[in-house]
Image 1 (cartoon, rainbow, N blue to C red):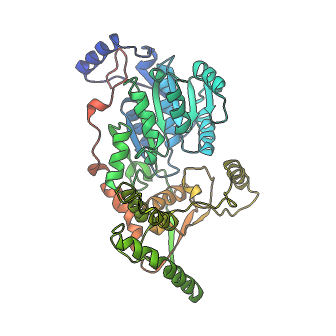
Image 2 (cartoon, rainbow, N blue to C red):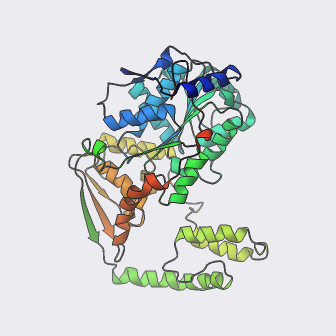
Image 3 (cartoon, helix red, strand yellow):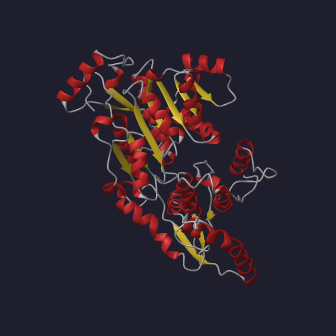
Length: 435
């Protein structure tokens, strides 16, 4: 471990903050330990990770790093130092799925040595009585946001004790998603907590990124791409090959039949002014779902329920009852066996995009990347960690322009997203500290 002095520069801000602490029910801080922060040396020290971790200790930070460049290490550093600084404070790491939660517990323990005796995993199968015991006796928690949201609303845990919240896959923090509700619940009880948001792809549109910034009370953004100078020296050159796949006659015939089926439904929606253009070949599922939400808010919704069912059929991607897909336990087992080398080819849906630790790969073939700039960023992040890794991106005719979209977002990401106003981000410090 190495230590760095955690001293600030603005003495006036420090005095104002300490004055607030004297009149608040703030969680006790260990002033001696808070003079320094600890960083691990059991992993190679990368300058960009150290810089981002230091910023994240003193600001509510959104960290945007491609997959494989060490967001989990940054989270572990922040969590461990808040664990040291606040002897009675609670730290929580939220991830959207159970496999991700289990994965992060192991990673944080291995990186920083957060004691397992002080750690708890809270899932829906833990009974309420046991949850109360865990919340009162443990200090570091790993859970889905839905689990924490339910515990806060039921009074199972005390919001005032939270000092650090880590949000994985933070791009989900829009609308009424549980991440947003958790932050609102805690903020209603205390302003003295730090937020660290992690995402390889915080959003493909600036207004979406701004929603994440606002909902998570972000005041500082750390964004890196694999081409940044302080990152590039730690990655390997990537090889990409775009293969244009011509659709065969049989597939074109099937496509024409599908379009023929959809055309009457689309025309009906067009006549009802629910959608604004009627070419079924160009309608995206996102556009249709947005149109459905707008329609549900209109006075005509109650008298047009059949049109809504057409929308749901056209835009949804749900599974039939007889084909519910794999359980998360099965998914974890498949990934484990793949990493052990029991088989050397893994075929996956978009579940492979959601931050799961797939392990080392030599080749990535993605059939959706050119329609998703965010997926391109994730593929770049994975392959740059491998000495001989490469990616093949099969492409439909006319889709090549999508490939540049992710680079365009990287160029404009930082300057066009406004940070939250400073007053939204409480500062956590002790005597001699002025972050």
